[in-house]
Amino acid sequence: MNNLNDEYYMKLALTLARKGKRYVSPNPMVGAIIVKDGRIISHGYHRRFGGHHAEINAIKNAIEDIAGSTLYVTLEPCCHKGKTPPCIDSIIEHKIARVVIGTIDSNPLVSCQGINCMRDSGIEIKTGVLENDCRMLNEKFFHYMETGLPFVTVKYAQSLDGRIATATSESQWISSEASLKFAHMLRAEHDAILVGRGTVVKDDPELTVRLVRGRNPLRVIVDSELKISTKAKVLQNTSEAPTLIATIKKPDDARFKRIASTGAEIITVKADKDRHVDLKILFKMLAGRKISSILVEGGAQIITSVLKNNLANRLVTVIAPKIIGRGIEAVGDLNIKKLAAAKKISIQKVSRRGDDIIIDSRLF
Image 1 (cartoon, rainbow, N blue to C red):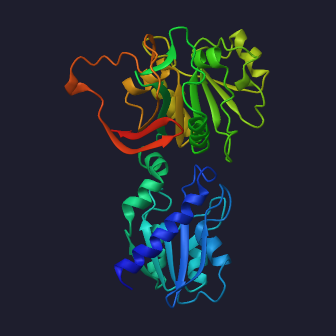
Image 2: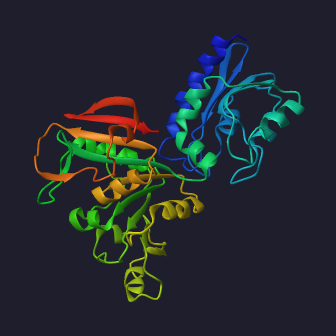
Image 3: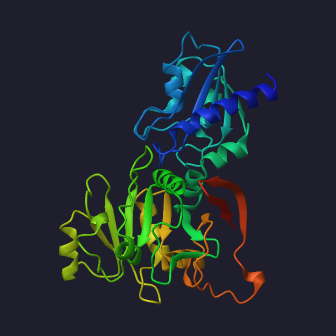
């Protein structure tokens, strides 16, 4: 079979994989197509975390015997038992003749081991078909697996002149309703959403997914002094949307018990030189809890700290067609004195939501 056919079927598998967005993390999105005698006889995708993987769903959905067929899958099939049995066992059992793989899995429990096992069983293997597309689809997963740290997206809405609030701290709503829906979609695509206590005090957000279908992320509130009000919305309905408070205070502090009574979890994090929660340490702690991605929504102090410490991987900027003048800047002092030291970004996509312009970029 020629490369063009392989790429055609892999594109279909990628389209299927995207259906798992907002439901499968921290697992990757994966799509699978089964082709026999030039016909697609089945397909499947990973629907939700803890459910069957794409390959198994494709095998179960087959409308005829799949022996001798070709399986197209966006990510190397797993060879270890997790929440589900190894996918390669079923592939071998059903006598699939050829497996075309988009990209190798970076998970050390899988990486090339699944490929080797299938080859040892006589299955023809081809890898690297639309590899860049397959890796980009799961950039959060690959970053987490390859660095041991969460993939961090910084998102904020600003006026055309770079303000996220007026001089009196009014910020609701700078962006359009369409952009708010987009923001909720971003929340559902991340394992955790992080803001500082200042944002909780000023806006009292729920930090849940309400405008789109998807899971609620873990709500992480950075509150160095543990001064959050127990009446804050982020401390309500913690059974449906769990909340974690990161502080520099010790567990014997009287405020621990007061806040813990709401159902929120509190963790003590080492302070940085400014006596604030050290975000580098916090992100490592969250990675240890299998949080593979974090959406940082503010405020300005948190956004600035994340950028200053080179913790951000992605920057999503919503620009509203408004001019505020004097107000609160989206990004504060990064201690950059020369243009040569400016943060470099690569713009991946520019789109429009309502009247707003959205710039989606990566930092390097």
